[in-house]
Image 1 (tube, helix red, strand yellow):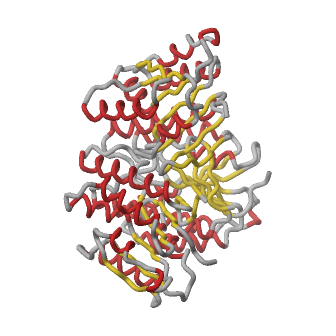
Image 2 (image 1 turned 90 degrees about the vertical axis):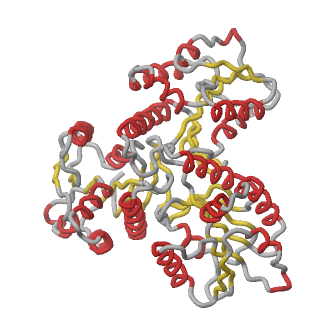
Image 3 (image 1 turned 135 degrees about the vertical axis):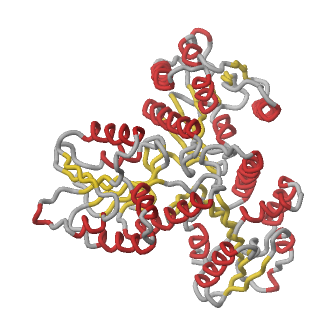
Length: 173
Length: 173
Length: 173
């Protein structure tokens, strides 16, 4: 099956959400992996290496911690029809907040870029709002902003799934 | 569609659960908003204001931090058929525990009142049990009590949904 | 309905996951309860007592904090067809890590034993990855290991459900 439109894959920590997102891409076909994480520490380096090993050779990787909306706007159909996997919005939002940018403004720009995207896009994002509310005010603000972002992206997506234990629950299709 | 019976809307932090609960009410028809939160700090005041703006003018708001079962018992059909939105049980339970009342006794009284309610009732509640168990004993006890309360209300509800990214997963219908 | 094959029941803290797992067993028929928790403190003792009261008299209880794969391997059909409830993998994994064993090796041994199990098995496990990521590195490592374990068991299971407020969402069937 060819992937089309906008798909949002939500999931918790180690839910298998990234592997599920990758599984939506036809094997052996070229695709663009838009990585929002930078290999800042050993834990993250190991995670990125594991993702890379799983994806295999027909993926092009682009690292972009902040301006993913601009990357999407620059993807014209003329440059090839390779679909895009953005992994993940959780890290992107953390980068946005660390850079002092406004999460709401950036979220609106991302949604506008998605609605005009020239290629199919799969976005992976974390669901972090189903535990006890954090005592730490920054963590609470992050969870609020991620919840708002997930709602906004879900509203413009054609399909939304929540992954648990590697298995999808369909929220929108 | 006219709302009927008892509906429980569960969701995480910033999942869109309150907006989803409100969306179940027919637009332009009168309804009763039973708010369990009091405008104690700036964050809460802003949240209440946002809810109020979203709801519009045909809602009557009643603030009741503790005795929501009594409010339900006093709603006779003669006083009008306006359905009720209780938002939210998470804050109500925190109020119950802060007041030194027994969560189990209060939960049973609420469920009994729901089973005899003269009007349709939608209850919004938080799902906080899907993260790592809290180190803080009070937070752990709260999560336990909320889990028990959600189970008890779900058992007497006609419909239960879990909202994620603004979208409902049907648990009971 | 007779239970068959391998069933994984996931759920959060006080979600009703254990009671749901028990409800899959035919009433009045003998069954084996494989408890991974030891009655180490008052809170745990109370929880075990509540589980025991709910289960009633036709259950045999076996306490095994670590070697549940060995117990499964020793269950021959000749010893009777009583199905098995393993409650829960969360505590088992904590025991594995506290004993200095490798969670991945132990998880693989468990999955191999499940695939060869001579009787129907229901496993209850916690879903802890849907909250904000823990600040505590050990808690984060535990959440990662539990997420991996749940994915591995889900892959060999015939049925997987996520329980919230006592109600099941089917992930695999």
